[in-house]
Length: 186
Image (cartoon, rainbow, N blue to C red):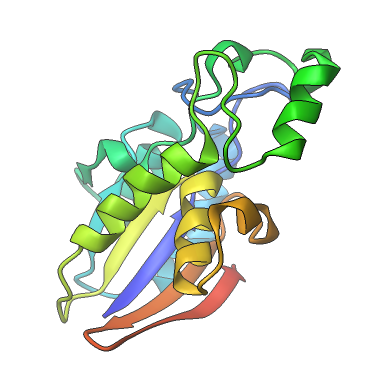
């Protein structure tokens, strides 16, 4: 089964804003450009699923040309009290604590990368393999965690799999084998 993992478009949030669980809209111009660029790569008759957050769902529905199923497990990390603040304004000691334990640290009131991995991989493992291609529109964090899982890495190494806004990855998944076939495809 071909699985197309797509990161949402750039958002309307000011540059440098920390957001994960905030339900911020996609930048309308970028959304239109990403739809035009990605649409030719989407297989005819593909199934779609999306994060329920507007920035992802808008892209999924535009590519599907209609309503799309959502799953809460595909949401971005919750940064707790950091949400909506500028990264540069966050306390340096908190950022240092996160850097010292990327997978296990949770911002106050938020989630750790390990907690996000549990819910995202719960979704991933629940997927039934079908002949119909699947298009998944989500966020950088969940998509990186899927990539680390496929490649046998750990959540602590997920930042090595940077995926740009509006880009996609291609996964081949069959009963005996899963392979990351492409990353940051335009």
